[in-house]
Image 1 (cartoon, rainbow, N blue to C red):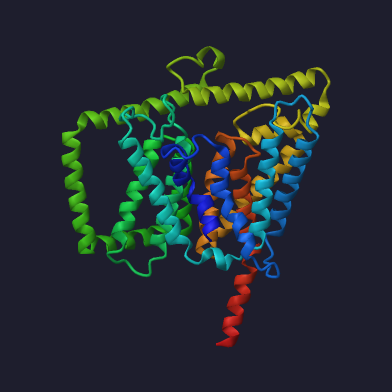
Image 2: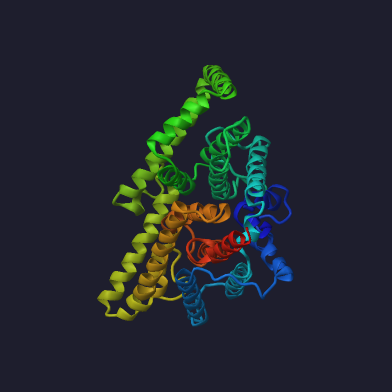
Length: 433
């Protein structure tokens, strides 16, 4: 359970220790060791005779995809700029997670999952706030992240945006599984507001889009208009909820009146960022506008990379090199920053279609889990996949240990294959009773 929780929600804490404290600034090896190390430790305590059947279809698809990617890596051109040692370590880490998770039981990762995951998420978010509040170079409107080194390098805000997104899911699940509405709901609401604030401070589009999708799916699968109405009424009838709402509104009005200039600055910054992203995605002359202050550098750069991929496809077609279209240009031929499209560029049409099948199948089983959750941990993993579902088109590499390792958790624990042990236990208990 700790291994799974640390991998999913521990990255903000790890990045603070790495960059904030300075234990190993900007070190990928330190990050992987802290995030994946617990999976290795679990091998010392496993009962290899106890085995739950994973989701056979999804697990087979992921396994085949990993093998194909590894073969492409082995057969890569000798002049490839890929760092061979780094890639070998990446595949070794993925293999470690595969073996470790395969012999985990859903029962074991579910015990204590929710409270520990919430605690780790809160610690990570709180450390970000602490770091930026003590950073003399941080100003209101700047993307919140932990700066490292002597320059103005703000680190990786996406880690903390993702952490806040996972925190929001955890809070909603905690509220969902409250047996009755009591005063314990107040800290959960406060934690939700805190995570939402951190998410907005990071200004990371992937986690923000993921959060919006999560809200839609969560309320679709758990509430009707009638249920929402009854819940709102029951909350408002609680004296402590009404008191907190009144205090919150009063404090909000007072804070806004005293800090109108700051709030206007923040709103302008957010509007400006969305406007730049829109212009970046819609402008035709990407290369001319890439250095313009009117575009978002990240989004505009990604559009240029995408255009390069299609230019390569057109060039291969015109030169009659159809083998490159069907079988790809080679392992990590181009840094595309759009993983789904990177599959096409590196591995070709056939693997692209295979990966697309895997992608949509993981969406299918995740939605099935959301509709009919088998456990809190598996329900969280299903909702958490929304982030990687969005990230598949918004950034990163396809062969990256955190992405593929999360895929492995999805196909291992998410509906329907992984619930066989749980069903057996329920049947055993009913027979005994």
